[in-house]
Image (cartoon, rainbow, N blue to C red):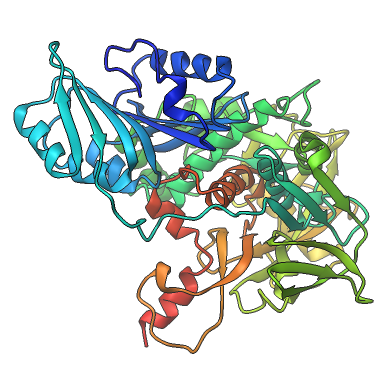
Length: 558
C-alpha cells in the first residue's frame, strides 16, 4: 500500500508470496512514489514476480499509455483521463489504492469493481460523504489522527466476467517469425514463458516483414476515433519498447532512423480538415506539428502548396532487424523451428500439436498463437476469419535518382531516405496473388512519388527493382488480438463475452501495412491477457481488437 504522504511503499508482507501485485495511484505527480516503490521491489527478496503501477497522469495526449521498463517484471501505466472515466475503462485487479484529493463519490463503486479481496486503500482529503460511500461499497474504513483514511476491501464477490484466468502452463507455440510472431515471443519470454517458434521459411522475416524498410508513424483524426487512439498508444509504446531492445539508429541494435516523417496534405479540402485537427487537439510539436505551405515547402525543398504534418518522432526501420532484436532478447526460453513448411494444428488432451506436411510433430504446447499473417487463411482453425491477402509491391530506386531528403515523405505512398544505396517507394495495394515484380505497379509507385516531389517525369526509365509482399488485412483495418472464436450453432450473440473460444488458441493478425507500430503493443496486450495482468489499453480499445468482433457483428443482426 502506498501511504498518501508519499513515504515508503508497501512492506514485504503486503505482497509476499504473490505472483503479481498491482497498485493504483490517483495522481502520478512527479513519479517519486513510483520510484520509491520500484526500489523497494528491487530490494525485497520476497517480492512478487510482477509489479504493476497504474496512475493518473496529466498529459496533452489523452488515453492509456504503457511505458516499458528496463526491469522486465515491472509495468508502468499512465492514464490521461478523468478518474471516473479511467476507472470505467481500466481492466485490472487492484491490490493497493492511493487516493488524493478527488471530487464526487462515483469512484467508490468503480474501485469496488476493480479491487482484489483484501485490497488496501489509503486516502487523503476525503469528505465524510466520500468515506461513507466507500464503506457502502465494501471498504472497511478507519481514520487516523492526521485525517488520513485507511481501508481494506472486505466484500466477498465472484470474479467479474471480464477477469481472465492466467494460463496454468506457461508454454506456447508461436506460428510465424515475422514482426507479429517475433514480438509475441519476446513479450512471453520476458514473462518467463517457454516458447517454440515455428516458421515455414528457413529464416525470420521472410514474408511481409522482409522489406528493406518500413515506416512507423501515428494516425490523426478530427474525432480522435478508435483507430487514432489505438495508433497513438501503439506508436508511443513502440518507441519506448525499442529502446529496451537496444534502440534504433546508427550503431543501435535496430537498423533504421527516427528521422521524422513529412505527410503532405492531399489537396486544399484535405488541408482544411488537417488544420482543424491541429487546432482542436493541440498536439505537442514533437508528436505532431501542422505546417502551412511556407514551412512545409521549405522543409521539402519543393512546392507543398497544401501544407503537411511533421511527425518528428516517426521514421523508418528495417523489419528484419526488429525481428532479430526481439528474438535475440528471448534468450534460452525460445526454441526456433525454422524451415518447417506448412503446418496444421491438432488439439487433444489439453495440448496443441503442430504437424508438418508429412504428419511429423514439430512442436506441442497448451497454447498456440497464430501470428503468421496471410498463412492464417490456410489453417482449419482460422480460415473463417475475415482476413484478406493484399499484394504490396515496393519499388527500389538507386541513391541519387531522387532528392536526398533526410526524412520519410508520404502521402498516397511513401519514400524513404536511401538505405544501403537504395530508396524504398510504395507500396502498391493490389487485390491479386501475383508474387512477381511487375512494371504496372512500379509505374504506379513512381507516379505517386513524382506527384509528391512535383516531378511528373520521375523514374520513367527506372529498372524494375523491388519486392512483393502480402499484407494480412481485416475489413476494419484493425489487428486481431486475443482468443480466437469457435464456430458454434449460429445463435444470436450480443456481447463478446458470449462468444465461445477455441481452447488455448490465440491470434495476432491483420496488421495490414502498420506492423512495425502495431506489433509491440499488440503482443504486450496478448501477453497481459494470457497472464491475467492489467491490460495496457482501455477496455473499449481492447474489445475493438478482439478477433470475435466480426462474429458478434454478424450475429447481432439475426
